[in-house]
Length: 620
Image 1 (tube, rainbow, N blue to C red):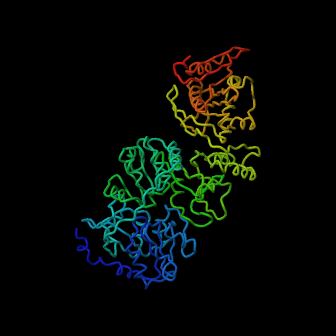
Image 2: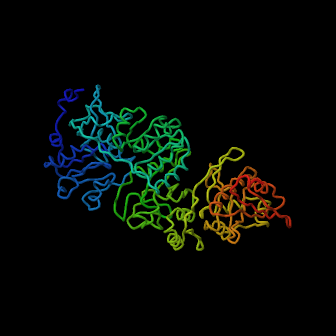
Image 3: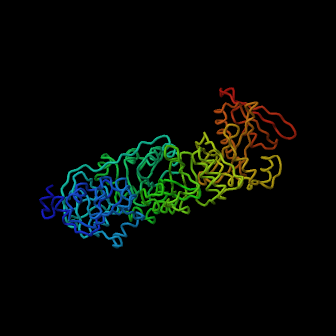
């Protein structure tokens, strides 16, 4: 279609378009992969008449020549989000940073509190109706186009036509500059061992039918890789990357159970490779909307089971999240993290997740810190944080005291830093003076979901130091009869010292697993623990299950998992002492499939369960 012939009065070269801009005006440049390179270059090359012009934008993938030294008289940059191309200028003081929620930027622009005089953008060629598409960047650009006095558009046939709220009539554009350049690309980083472990942990928090917000990078890529066994997932995010394509093509992401715009992948900008740009081109399942819609916590919360996954630079032991500063200097920006954390928190069944590696600088620095360093900016407050995930596990912080938060976060810190973090937590009175710690990571971090006799799913996972209070609650909820069966005595108290001994594991001489309902993963309804006798290579085992959960298969599930772990450690079997009238526990042992030896003395059985490599030999 000869669009240049249809709109000859608007078509011009880059230099001519730049000369339309007056000094002292604020100029917004298109975001991400939609940065109009040719026009940006012309601003510097052909804009000698400009002076005191303020350039604003989100992260852009192309060059930023206007922040180079020597151009201060002509240009000053204000970053809504600091990207690599302007970071040095911001840190050196040649450019400014505006801390702002991404959801609020369109409103600031449309109200002219943040005035935009000129919008310099990239669009697709006009269609037969005269509409161009903003393509891969609607975010804050739409508001700028609607508010600016002058809109200069690079018209690029490589820009995909996207649906949603991305179309602008050519009458709203004052200058059309023909270009034919490939869009900037940003490939997803391949997951490594650390990000892979984080991805698997995060995947356990995501139910089938959930709606996801994620970004680009190793951790988001690893999370999406771990979701190929899920079903009926949806997407409502600020940014769409290549990693979603495979899940869409396999049917894992289909949006069927979304409660806001069902069946649609909703985003505000697209950033990835040419494959992604081709995939979103005229794809009716993808909708782009402005950031005041995609990032509005009220809209986000309309998605049931909304799962937000965001990264961080550091988290302190109280749960404060630093995401926009590094070593006391501005590094990135607030972006959409708080928008999605709050939106997911208010979603029915939603979960906001902060995911980060446990260390930085090749393991030299812990990202879990006793306190944030001087100059660190708190992007997400401790009151907003629900889940923090590292390669060592999941810390659930919502509704937890500082003491519980500190122990949970130390539990998922890198083992090299746990002792130091615990010492600092004690010094700051975050935890008990006698609080124990665990310097080694659990080698059996894998969680299992089993189905009980009544059909309910149950999570079996290793016991954590941070489980102390839930374990204490388990014991206090037991009947007198269950207490006597567990301890062979009537106990009225289960103090902190006793609980610390139970959660104190070294994984060689002791191990414990707990049972939690998947609907209440923080609630412990059963525990199994063994302690090894090094002289015999047998381990004494004991179980406890809340009364209302007894006779449903929990004891057997705990025994099977502990036996699997014990055998991997080369143990020969278990020993146990069980009262004669504890028939449910006796049935667990005798029905275990292992050889069982028993001796009766003083009203109780001394049992011995012997492992065997042969299943037939192991049958009682």
